[in-house]
Length: 75
Length: 361
Ligand SMILES: NC(=O)c1ccc[n+]([C@@H]2O[C@H](COP(=O)([O-])OP(=O)(O)OC[C@H]3O[C@@H](n4cnc5c(N)ncnc54)[C@H](O)[C@@H]3O)[C@@H](O)[C@H]2O)c1
Ligand SMILES: [Zn+2]
Ligand SMILES: [Zn+2]
Image (cartoon, rainbow over all chains, first blue to last red; front, top):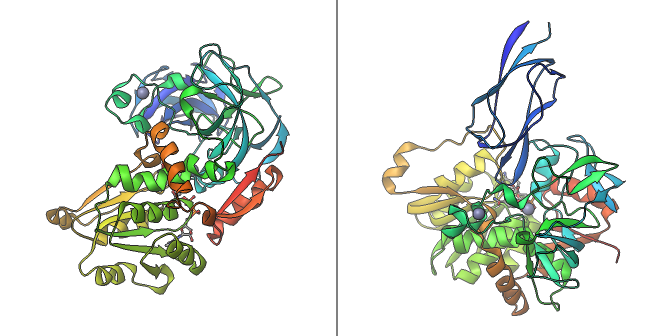
C-alpha cells in the first residue's frame, strides 16, 4: 500500500465532499467538488484505493496545490 | 425536455431526455430560443478545463420566461431575457464594490443537499456555469438573467449573453481603452471580433486584428479593424511593433494559449496594458520578460468583460439597433440542437464565426 497525496489543481471553495474516510474509490472518481469562478471542478483520484484522511470540509477555501485528501492506493 | 448531455470528455454530446426541477423562490424557468456555441464550451469538452460530469454545456443564450419562483418580482412569464453566467449575489464584498462578475457566492446555485436543478431519472446532471443552455429549458437564479426589449432578434441577443459582453466588456470595463489609442486583438472568433467592435466604439485610433484565417480578418475589417496581420506569416510581434511605431497601448488575447498571451505582452509599448481573455488550460504557466516591467507594461485577466450585465446588455442592444454593434456578421450558421457536435467541431478549425442553435418553438 502506498500513501498518495491528492492536491487541488485550482483555487476554490469546497462545495461538496463526495467521500468519507474508509471509502474505497476507483481511479478517476471525484473526491470533492470545488466551486471556482462559477465552475464545478472535481478533485479526482488518479488511482484506486481507500480514503485514509480528509483534510478539508464543505465551504473550506482551498489554494492551488493544497493537499486535500490522502489515499492509501491499492497494490 | 431534450438536452445535449456531455457524459465523458472528448466524446460527442448525446441528445437525451432530461428532467428539470420546479423553480425555487428565487429561480426562473427560461425557455431558450437561441443559444450560441462558444469556444469555452469546447475547453470543457476537451478537458483543458475539468468539470463535473455528466453536464449540459452551453452558456450564451436568450429566451422567454416560462415560470418564476415565489419571490421573483423582476421578471414574469413571457418576458424576453438574456442569460449570463455572471450570476451575482448582490451583497458580498465583490458585488458591493462593483465587481459583480467576480462574485463567487454559492447562493446563486442550489446547495449540495438540495434537489439538483437538472436530473435524469433522479440521477443528478451538473448544471454548467449555473446555466446549461444546450437544453429546451433552463432553471436559473434570477440574478443570472436580464430583461430585454422584445423587438431585439433572439439569435443576436444570444450572442450578447457571452461573446459580446466578454469582448466589448474587456475593452470598456477591464482595459478602459482611451480614444485615439493603439489596440491589437489576437484571435478573431466571437470574442475577439467583439473586442474589435468594442475598440471601434471606444474610439481607438489603430485597431490591429490578428488571426490565422483570412476570412476572419475580413470580418474584423468590417467590424472596425484598421489593420490585419495573418499570424501564420511569422513574426507577429515584430510586425505589430513596426505598424504601431513602438508597440500598442492595449492588447487583447482572445484565444487561450500560452504563446499568444506572451505575445500580447511583448507587443505592448511603454505603459501599455495586455488583457488576457482566452481561457488558458489549467496548469499552464505564462512567462514574461522581467525587464519589461521597468517600462510599466501591465498584464491582467478579464472575466466575462468585468460586466455589470444588467446595465451592459441592454446598452449593447441599443448599440446593435443603432448600427454600432455588428452582430449580424458574427453569425455564420443557424443550426438545430441535434447539430451541436458539428458546431463544436467547426470551432476547432477557427474557420467559421458563431453557430447559433435555434430551438423549435
Ligand atoms: N474570460 C472570459 O470570461 C471568457 C468568456 C468567453 C470566452 N472566453 C475564451 O475566449 C477565447 C476565444 O473564444 P471564442 O469563442 O472567440 O473562440 P473562437 O474559436 O471562435 O475563436 C478563436 C480564434 O482564434 C484564432 N486562432 C487560433 N489560434 C491562433 C493563433 N495561434 N494565432 C492567431 N489566431 C489564432 C482562430 O482562427 C479563431 O478565429 C476562448 O479561450 C474562450 O474560452 C473567455
Ligand atoms: Zn462563452
Ligand atoms: Zn456577490
